[in-house]
Image (tube, rainbow, N blue to C red; front, side):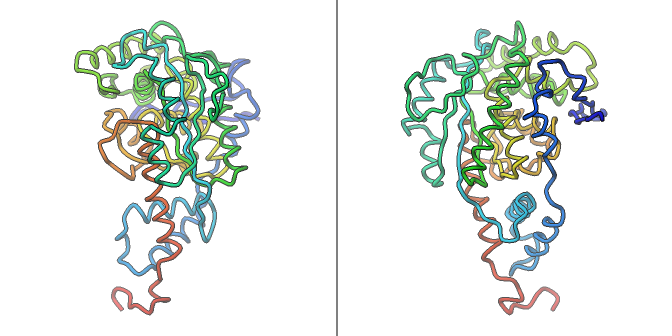
Length: 386
C-alpha cells in the first residue's frame, strides 16, 4: 500500500505530496524510526478537547475572559488525554551546530562564538541558564554539529554528525544521510524525555549563521521573497542584512529553479539550505508529537524546524506551543503559516530557548487554573443570565 504525507503549499496553491516509496535509497523516509514516528503522530483528541472547553467554560469567570490561557489549557488536555492534566519533568534542550554559509559574510559574529557559547551554557552563565533556573527546569546542551572538539567536556550531550554544514550558497548544506542522522537524534532525544517522565519541553538553538538558514527555509516553504523573511539576526547593519538576503535569494534560485508555484519537498529544503541543529529540532518536534509531549518552540530558527516537521506530519501541530514572537520578520510569517499564536511578544531575538522557557510559566498557570479554579456549581456562584 502506498503511504503519502502532505507537504506544505505556497500561499494559494495546492499542497504537494511526498510518497515514501518514491524517495531515494538513503532518504530519511526509508528509515524505520523516522517513518514510524511520522505515521504515529495523531491530532489532539477531539473528545478531550470538547470536555476541556466545557470545563473551562464552567469556571467562575466570564466565558473566554482568560484568553490564551484557556486555549493553552485545552490544547494541553487534548494532547495529553488527561482529565486532570499534570506537568512534570520540565526540560530545555539547546541544539548547537555551525553553518558553512558564514563564509559568505552574513553574520556579525565569527563562528568561534558557537563553541564559546556552548561552554557558557554548560557553565550556567547564559541567558537561558538563568531563565531555566528561574523556571526550575532541567537544561540539556546537545552538540549536533559544532565546528570544534569538546572531548572530555562534562555535561554536554555529544551527538555530533559533522563539524558544521557545507556552504549552501555553493552546494547543498547536508547529505540525505546527514539529514537522516539529525532527524533521528531529535526523535531519540524525545524518546529519552518520555522515559524520564517529561511532559513539557522547550527547544532552543545555538549556531552562528542559523538565522540565514531559517530565512532560506521560510522563503522556500512559503514562497515569500527572501528580503521579506530576512532580518538583522545577531546585530547586522542594513548593508550586511541586504547582503544576507541576496545570498539567500541566489541560493534558492540555484537549489530550486523549478515549479515556483509549489513548495519543494520539505526534506530537500532541509538538505539543501538547512542546518544540523534545525534538522534535529525537526526530529525532536516529530518525536515529541508522536509521544504526546508538549513542545514549546522558541524563535525563528526553532519555528523553521517545526515548520518542516508540520510539512511532514501536519498533526504534529497539536503538540506545538509557540513561546513568543521574535523581532525577526520571518518568524511571524512562519507562525502565520502554521496558524500558531505566540504566548508572548517581548521583542526578543536572543534564541537559546529564552522565549520558550518564559512561556513555561504561562502554560503552568493555565493548567493551575484548569485544575484548581472553582466552577460556578462548586462555588455556589450564579451564572450569567441566571
